[in-house]
Image (cartoon, rainbow, N blue to C red; front, top):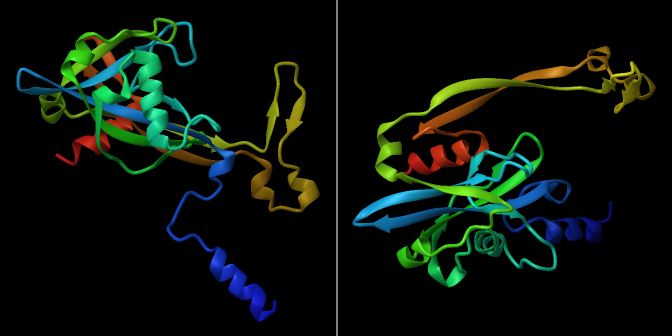
Length: 218
């Protein structure tokens, strides 16, 4: 390598750390909406419509970053909130954000924190094709109720046997000359799962992870 090429490398190094391989992952953003009612702060969640993917789950408003539409992840969060809850960005004050979350299944979530205009909240119009209902939880409830903790186990599989007994190879371990240990599923990693319960509803998954990170900052 010549000195000129090495200088090019230095010039092209990231100015600040990002997420390696971000372009291969599902990039998304969510809004953590706060609303102040009679002097008390609440967090607003939405319950996904039963007929859509992950139907029935409790989540924050948000969705995937749309190339050519969104100029930033903040814009993604605001756009999705408008589409799902009918609350315009002029009625949302973004007060900050949390760290980037990289989920184990290949998704990146950028969480933003917003304070909703109370009148806009009272007059919101949910998109029933996406949202069954909203769930409003007092902040104080989370500060006095710890989540239940469980574990999920995941593993990496180099192949899959379908229902007809056919073997679909994802990684040709033999052909590549990789160690024998990789001929079978590996990893066996346990993932912590947090579960909050409120008024008959269950908040878990990525939403609970984001919520727990938020709550530790109070």
